[in-house]
Length: 377
Image 1 (spheres, rainbow, N blue to C red):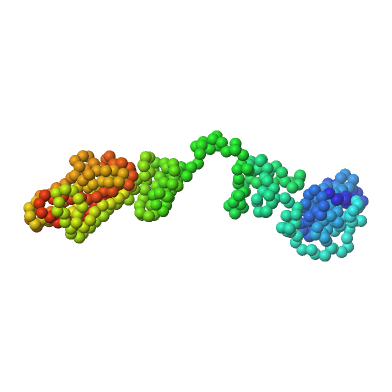
Image 2 (image 1 turned 60 degrees about the vertical axis):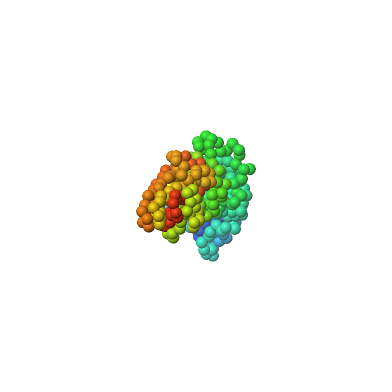
């Protein structure tokens, strides 16, 4: 630092030394900064007290080493009224030590106005500690993990980072790399669950993913957790993982009001074509179908559901996975037919359920027929 001592002796009106007087030196007109040295900002106020002999001394920054130019000191001797009263002096500090009276100025320097540390000056005097508001690439020391950076551009500066919130805008895309995070930096001790996966994050937060189709979903989610869900944008269906397989929980249904017929003693499609729905199931599903039927001669009609795809079940199969219903009705009389069936042993995957019919005499007429399948996770 470039400093000089300013001295004075305080005497009362009788010439007796006055001790314990507070002397205050204030830098005017505002903040000042050293042009050279190990510290940047000049102390804005310095105090001392007079000794028993009434003497005092203050070490102040030399005017030639202060920016902005035109700065000066105001010296205030706070002498009690009984000893002569408060005295105020305006001085400039030269390159060598001086008495207070030798340093006095008669005319105040020109008003330089408020002084601020500009960005340019700040950038020139401070090296940034990492990516906090600058383009500096200086790395933050390891101790910054606990909130304090252990190194800076100057030996007399230690920057504390505790409590700072680093915005995403301040972290470049490539700011965090494997080269900057040692292999042993993240351990099982620090992450008790051992890993953070997409599946665990989705399951914990109740996220419902949206995918273009089932293929895209199963490709993206390779290790699903029980209860995970995704929306199939192609089929507009919601799917849930039951711990073993994905199951569509959106009912699949089809309804046809127009009349059609079947003339065959074997199970098959109606004359209007196959009446079927496809759905992603687990091993269980609830199947419901209904229709109205009539015939011109007294006969019997039987409706049943065939399953194809991941599972193969023939229509009319008498088993826990089959549905077999028949109705006896009068000539030209509409008779309702249908029911509900529970399938408990399907093969998980895409299963197609087709409503099929057979008759024993003549052509049976069917209308208002519907089929609905609800997969059960």
